[in-house]
Image 1 (cartoon, helix red, strand yellow):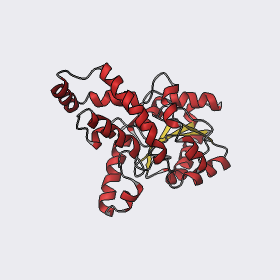
Image 2 (tube, rainbow, N blue to C red):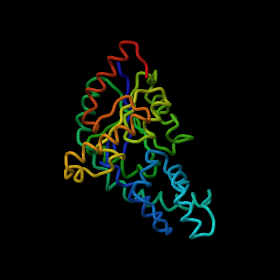
Image 3 (cartoon, rainbow, N blue to C red):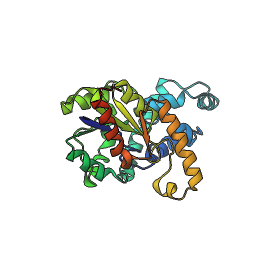
Image 4 (cartoon, one colour):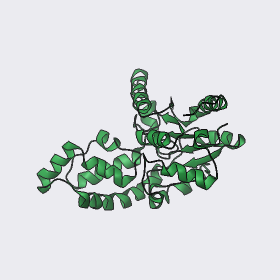
Length: 265
């Protein structure tokens, strides 16, 4: 009964832990003399990157640092300046962090077998995706549609990326489609588009660790971190939460049954 699944990219399909954008945001702000924590950098993750910058300079602690250094609070000109530094730097490294997350190939194969279309949205711009897409294709992720943040009038949590996927893939209604992502912005994007939503915890931004770091975690700590991530994503509107895409197929079956029974998200 599900007609299409729309995936996020970093933290969901590639870049386990959503590491690339976090690293670049911290470094760009550091270059301006601003101490941005990793946790702060991850807060707006999933949004279009310019909107992400706006959110960060709106943090009171960051604003006060900025005023102390530059004798004024940051404004839209500063957003533009920071973004002008961010886009090329992020474009340089995203390809290096584009290894697909375990289970992606298998999930894509099963969805193809079931006749389910495969779309995707991302907070990255088209230029940033130029180094990501070829590497993902080489590794077996072959979507029917890719929509970047620069192709829509407003990024997440607005629903336009999901709507553009639906339009390009000639699929509807939205209530028979599923959004899978790892950020609050992903969940809100799916909900605002009238879709079912599945949140990824362990592979994503909310846990925020690489695959090798996750493997080294004490089991108790890992459970606590996953639970905290689940709470965040459920509060944002996720209908279901999973560790990563490798667990999505049984959940998609549950959603199909709910659709068959007349339920809507």
